[in-house]
Length: 385
Image (cartoon, rainbow, N blue to C red; front, side, top):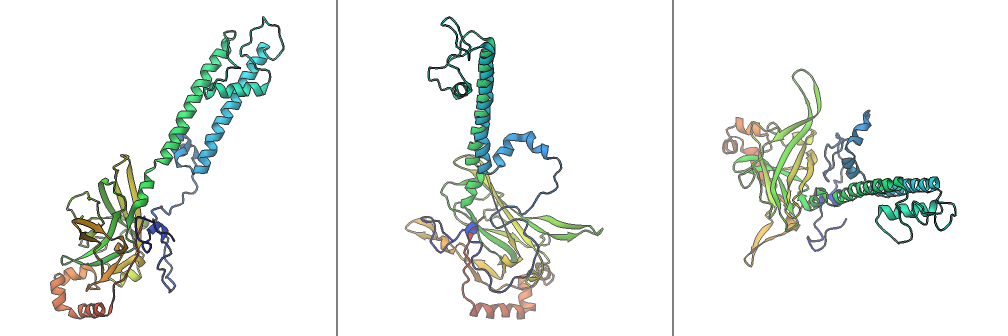
């Protein structure tokens, strides 16, 4: 496990590098597969695709999506094959015109100094990559040679445009920028402004900003309709209460993204004990435009039931030092226990809210307070998606 030197302390690990940090000592209960991994990759395998030809209808996107090794192999083979093909054509032109035979001084060949296939192959390379060594050149003797010179130049320009454009797009892909967009390793559920809330923390390690950044959340779980239809991956949107009160966020310092668990929330009937038994996965998607390149980027992560901490909240990371605001990323994923009812938000509403619940059912709250006195700050190293 390596932390990014110069950016964050050694004890702070990014999510993509910290999958094995703080693994529970007990054996986790078997659960369904994750829909989205912590690194943001989608855990979906596409099988039995019969119409493979659809990928060839968009060759450029297919080349960009390939692995680097496959792209470099195609890049090399495209040039080698074109050089060999046109080298063969130049050799046939020379053979048909008689340039390979030794003639007198008055004989004018189609292409000078072509005596074998090797010399025709070298001339093909010179034509396509516009390298002229001066020994071989085309003459006015053959119209077919002039036409072939034009054709090879056009084909060479097309290959250069496609392959160089493909390599540029692969090197400038927006997912590289997402490496420095980080999410807290755990999500928390606690009381905020007298409401039960689901919260995560996000941050950006670079000084260059993400313009028009937005955050979306979805709950993915198995559900059954009223007609008995089983939906294995039911995606339910989560409304969020962004800290700046608008649809976009100003991601200069780490922000806590809050979702108020109300009657319209898919977590409305979930209690602390339900998290131990239900297979719930919350997907978080951060989107925005990279300030330096203008390319739209997206970072993703997810939180399963075991990664949602009930009755805890994030500790502050921003402090004012010497007239500037300093962010301590060593505290990015740290949480502290706070008094929180263990019941669901639905039961809180039925009891008349947090205040009425404290008065009518003080027992559970006193239990939480006792636990708080004996608890210490729990540190959860965070990482990026």
